[in-house]
Length: 319
Image (tube, rainbow, N blue to C red; front, top):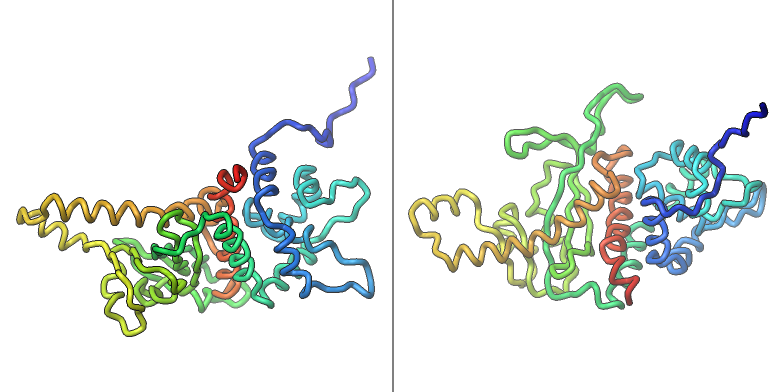
């Protein structure tokens, strides 16, 4: 009896998997033409040797790395193993050559060298502003810790000197801190700063403002931001410290009006937690991948640009 030929996974099914749905939505909301226009002047011309891959192809591969937490070698393997990824990158012709990990690495270095991540965030936010999705009246400032490997089992025999340890609550963390300024209405991120983990939130407060807001919201870590010499003339709405709040409540001085005000401030501040959730849970970014603040801040900037598009995708697709 003749055996049936084994299915080796090359059946290009049209089943609408969650991964396919995700890539389809992102394909429709990412401003590819604008981003390609931004990167093209810096891309190699390929006058000698093999012709370079198209800028849009490399951008699509770079973004898939961010969405699915893939290293350069893992991204190369995924292109060979997954028809869906090749299709998204425009490499679905069966006899086309595929980028290797060195090509993927060089493209990332090109973006870092010319500081294009920040410009890509500006391009994305210009699109969102044009659609009326990014307002200018208020900014929420906040920061989140990103862990870094604390092991010294590496080529240099030491931890990353640009990272630092800090204590939060009763637990110690080693890594960096992502400081962000987000739109108070939508939660979309407009400004990002990367520092060592031990840099206090209030130090970066003024750097997170775009200059057109009238109100700024922050948690108790931003107390005193309005009194700093580099603070702009704004209305700062900073949360009452937990100790002071507990003392007032204990002495029956936390009246209903003050309690309602704190609740309203907290509901606005909660908007900035949404992009943190997207990059950490949706995109799986919970630990730095590279050494040094510059490279990791560039990756964070790209992640927040993509999280803005993800958070606004429904409205963009319905516009």
